Length: 450
Image 1 (cartoon, helix red, strand yellow):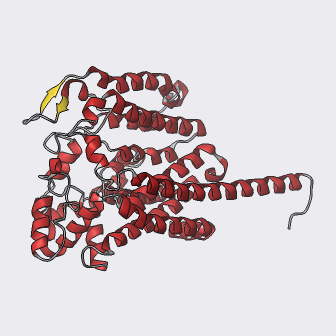
Image 2 (spheres, rainbow, N blue to C red):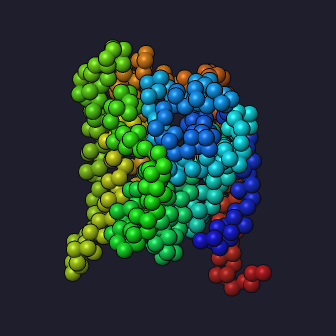
Image 3 (tube, rainbow, N blue to C red):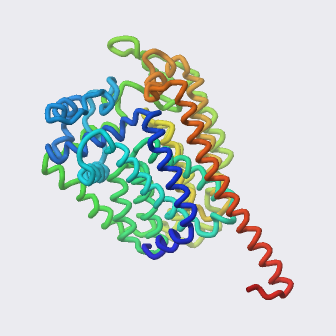
């Protein structure tokens, strides 16, 4: 894997330098445009680890910010804690992501100043590595297949926002996720399982790949279990994961707010946030996203089911393995189940497109992701009175952009930078395609190519 990474870094060095330059320009712009609460919060908890150890998992944001302020850390500015409606939540991210930020703040100690930008910079480097890993996974498809290019371009924008613009954990999660896929392609199944376990302990969503790995090689799951000791051991030193479990299960104890516009529970349980205590009411238009999604799945699922001939003469275990593409195609549907789904969560499952064996299936999977994204946006309109209310999820989300209308100017600038990068990238690939085509035509004519 290291050899492949080195080779691809050299091969795509020009694009990586360009991406790094765009990212470095975007970091200070985004820092002004967006209140990056997740990054600020991770900075605070990373610094707090060296003072309180793993017991910070039992401390909510407000308590910790006040405690750190008494020690000289300027974290009680309301920008390093969750919004008021989540103020009672203790730290809920898994242990590996927590340790990542603890190490990052140890390498660049202090608080405020350049430290937040340092965290963005580290995540930008990880994002660039992710692009290299994707080029390894996609191989020649990146040059020859339209769906691969569209996915890569989408991930470029998503990764740039998550790293330079948001300071979120997703780039690190994806890095371990992609490394696991590369190792699996190289038939290093034990290492792939171990790396997948570390990814799950950064954020939980890569766990969707575990059943697939387990079916293909059950014995290798031992290494997944071994990696989980990274989470078990800190529990003996004061770590508590009650908030993490509450977050995963999306219970109302984590938040009374529902931010998933596709969540069917809005039909019979839309919160009335203006009442105290919060009451709930029926809202039938909330069913529209699900009503659209179900027929779409019924009409498109057939190509992901194995043919009868694919199952004949095979053992039960082999028949289960034949259902792997059916399983992958069903996964985006889990986004309907959870109360708490932010817009960028929609791209969490997009990298699974790499695992499909045919271009038709891969293209169909991306189309499904587009449909789910459309339903998320359409669901906001279907539930507009709730989402746009005061208080309401949209008003809270807009509150993360302190410049209000001026934010759009910055976003346009970042969009222009990302667009220029994509156009240069596309122009180079098109030029390479034309060159390869001319060379093949010359070889067909029997000409000598030097």
